[in-house]
Amino acid sequence: MAIRETRHIIKGQETSDGAGVKMKRLFPVPGVTQVDPFLLFDEFGSDDPGAYIGGFPDHPHRGFETVTYMLAGRMRHFDSRGNSGLLVSGGAQWMTAGRGLIHSEMPEQTDGLMRGFQIWINLPAAEKMAAPRYQDYAPAEIPATKLPNGIVLKVVAGTAEGISGPVNGVSRQPLLVDAALPAGTSWRHKVDAQATVLAHVFEGSAEIGGRPVGATQMAVLGEGDEIDIEAGPDGARILVLAARPIGEPVVRAGPFVMNTRAEIEQAFKDYQSGQLA
Ligand code: MN
Image (cartoon, rainbow, N blue to C red; front, side):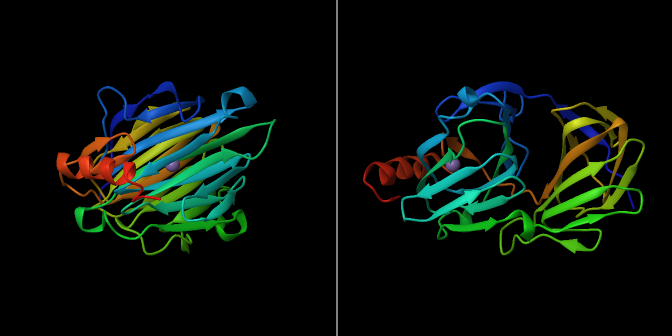
């Protein structure tokens, strides 16, 4: 048994993407291009419609997965094959882009708070050209458990404290847990020793792997098979993510993430010739 120590703390930077959606990007940022197999982690949150109303109009993806987890607000998803889904507060979408598609992610509200996360997870070469797949889960489909000390866990993917999330059949054996820790509580949890583990504090503060981590900061954990989180004086809400690294070359250009330059050029050709529609 070895507790994972925090190796780095990522502070991220304010940015905007899509049609001007304001967000905090933990990575990629200068100095942190990826944390294999994680390619991107964005936290968006605003009560100003002007900061999110433009949404993310039609754009392609190929070669990886996008995970959206909503804390507040509603986001409508459409794709080039006629699929549609509505993500609501507390819901999640796990999209395996595989060989590719074109989709839009648009707010379905004109006022109030919009808040959530988008995470990109890479696919190994053997799965990059798989058929696209969506998993959309309503809040009621995401199981929650309350531990005796008051900690509440919602499990989107993987297993924690005996409950398993609904996400299935995806690469890298992921864990995605939304953990709410009351002040003064601590959570020690066994994790896959082969996985990359990230812990993003989105409210309050915590000591994670022996280091203090403040709100909107992310701990990148080192080797071990257990995580140790101690909530700060105001408690903490933390997204815990784990997934097995891939260890292959990564060539990325905008919405395409492949292994070689030639594959990226092919992706642009396929997009321009309508092959992703
Ligand atoms: Mn997208």
